[in-house]
Structure formats: structure tokens, C-alpha cells
Image 1 (cartoon, rainbow, N blue to C red):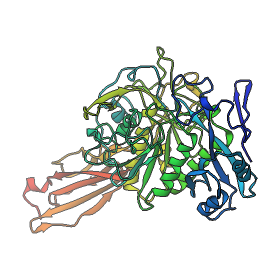
Image 2 (tube, rainbow, N blue to C red):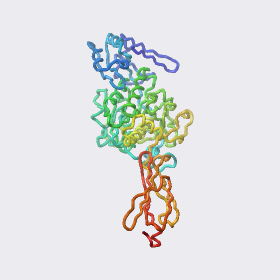
Image 3 (cartoon, rainbow, N blue to C red):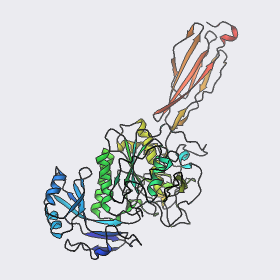
Image 4 (tube, rainbow, N blue to C red):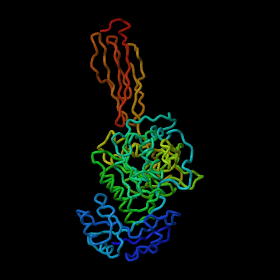
Length: 531
């Protein structure tokens, strides 16, 4: 079925008649690589002769062979065959007869014309990168403590070692100091632009996102392996709507199944700029990646609108992240024409205002450049870093299990949400600290009953497990460790017939543990009758 392009904006319907014999009313205005001047009011342009073809579910077992047979004796050029997120292919079909033949094939479900989509990066355009106040790495310590006041420390229990991070964006500037030594996997990238960039960034957005997701100093997961999935060009435009699907297919095809992974998509694709069929493919692709590769973390978008009207925010399987400020409010600067999106499709907030990250230098000379930015683009990769931290210690977890952990662990009720944000989940991203304990109690007790407290800190403050153990120190040597309690405090009867002992508590929370011990002098030492 050849998909007609029916665009609904507000109460008006705009139709592009895509007769196969006349793919575009004005082909000269709809080049596959347009001049990229002023974006059209509807946010997209039709690409002549460029299609995604989708086979019916279960109808084609070998898409490569079927595609070759379907396009035999034609001038069509296949760009990518899809095996994973759906079965089909993308490419150019310049002659109307071949388009008709493909469309009428019984195993073909859809023949979808592709589009140029403008302003896809989930970052405000025409406004300063920095808006609002910030504090050094405030986004890190805010997600590492649940409530005010904050000690401005960040103490994670992992760093994302062994986890692959796929940055679906404008590329990554691999020479930046934040990604040394060699953390951007330059031998494994996606890039359909054939402009010599080979996954490298020439826009800056992808580098800034990657800095928050996996930079050495600006990320909470500085040990991740970064992969560039370059779907935007140097102007931040999605030059072909199929490039986004092709990038997601590349991840599904190339990802080593033995490695845990996170997919970050800091983009905003308004639903009105894509056909319903492409939107269905994108949301189904997200489901497939979560099931087979790892969690998908998406930006909510920055139009101060309902996030459900944008991809990836609308994908049910994705974790959709809105942006918050250092004051625990939604990012909605009154002096700028932009704000975090909101609504039922938002899963949680994360710091996204006044965020320090890797800067992009278009001359390539300042590899240590940094910048301060604000957008949901930089809230989403912070959550991607939390996912990577979790996957280091839980590498066999499924994408949905990681998503559940992030939502379950989030801090509830700490944000001030007023209209239109009051119908958005009041959850703030959180990652536990390494648990610790500090024993408080007598070190030289009298011969009676005494209590020692563990004073736990870090971890998940609502879910601690305790193990108290005691070891006596005899004149002939140390005795065995013996468990004496499993609560926050322990109460022991101290006898003047017992020797000195060491009391130790181990606190476990959120998959990590910490401990403390205290040497206790027995009353028998005072009497000189120690056994």
C-alpha cells in the first residue's frame, strides 16, 4: 500500500498528493540534501523517489533475497535491508513502474515516501546554550541524594564499566579530551551521510549529549564504551526520515549480544512531521531494542507541550525524561521561548538546566572545550548514565528490568509541579551511593547491657539490610566471627568475664555494601580477670 501523506495540524488537514507518476509537485524544492535554509512551517519536506518498503509480518524469511528479486531490472538503489526491527528495505526507486510493482506485491505491506525533518535535536534553537544558574556538577550530586540539604558529593557504586552506550544523534567528536583514551568506538559507528564524517560530530549536539552520557568528568558513567549513531547532519536536521530507522536497525544488527547496552535518543520528532506508518515503525523499533539490546532513554522535548506528541517520548517502551532545575522545578525559563515537555508520557525528571558538558569546537583545535547547556537533551543522558551504572553490576538484566529499576528507585514527591506540569509524574532520577556505616556506642562499657547504632548512609535510604558480627580477642588468639544482630542497632549484654572484642556491622543496599567496626574494651580488663 502506497502511503499518502496526510498531515493534520490543529484542525486543518494538508495533503501532499504522491502519485507514483508524480512523486513531488516541485522536485527542485525537495532535494534529498536541501539547502537547509528556513524550515517549512510544517517542519518537513518530501524527498522525491525515496522510500521505506515494509514487508508483511512473517511473509518474507530472507529480506535480502526478496528485495533483490523485487527490484530486479530496475534502477532502484537499496540503502539498507531491515532484518531486525521490521523486515523491508530503504532506498531510491526513481521509476514509477517499479514503485507500482513493489506496491502491488502481495508480501508488501507499506511503501512509505521519506521526508526531511527539521529541528529534531531536543535542544532549543535560537537561544543561548546556557540558561539558568548552575553549580559544578550539580546534576550529579542532585541524583545522588534524595532530599535537601545536599553535601554536593557524588559517590556512585559503579561507573558503567563494560557497558556500551549508543548515542543516536549528530555524531560524537571523538578527539575531545572527555572521551580519551579511545572511549568512542570509532571502528563501530553508523553514518549514512557519506560526507566524510564517519560518525564524527559536525554540529555539536551529539558531543554535548555524549559528554553527559559518558564523558570522563561530566558523566556519572565515565567507563562506558561510546558508539556514534549519526542520524543528524551538520545543521541538526534529519535529512531522511529513514536514517533514524536505519540507525536503530544498525544497533540491533551490530550490538554484541554478550554486552549490556543503553540507547540514548536526545531527539524530538513531532508526530505531525512523520506519517503514521513511520511513527508506528519507530515505536515498534523501540520495543524491539528494549527487548533485545537494552533500555532506550529518550528526551521529553523542549516545546513546553505534551510529550506524547513527540518521538521518542511517545514510545511506551522508552524511558522519557523531562528536565528539572537546581530548585527542583520543571525547566521552564520565563525569558525563553522554550520549556521542558510534560504529561502522561513523561516517566521522570532529571536535572537538565545549567548542565556542564563537553563543548564542540568546529575548528577541532580546543579539545578541552566545555560548555553549559539547558534542555531535555541533557536530562536524558544523565538517566542513561544511571542505567549504565546499574548494568555494570547487573549485566544480564533485560531492558525492561533496567527501566523498572530506574523508575522504582526515583525520588518521589520532591519536585514542585504547577500547571501544566501538575499531571506529570513527580519522580526525580536517583542513583544510590555506596552504602556506609558509622558505629555509635560505648568503646569501654560497664558490665551491663549496651546498645550500638549503625548510622547507615548512602544506598537506597528506604531499603537497608544489616548484619552485626562480633569477634572476641583471647590471650591465645582471635575467636570466630559470630552474628549478633540484623537490625539498625544491636543490643548486647557485656560481661566482666569476657575479653575485648571487635564489633562490626555491614550495611547492604541497592546491590552494594559498606561496613564499619569498633574495638570494644571489656570491663574485665579493669578488674584484671580476663580469660
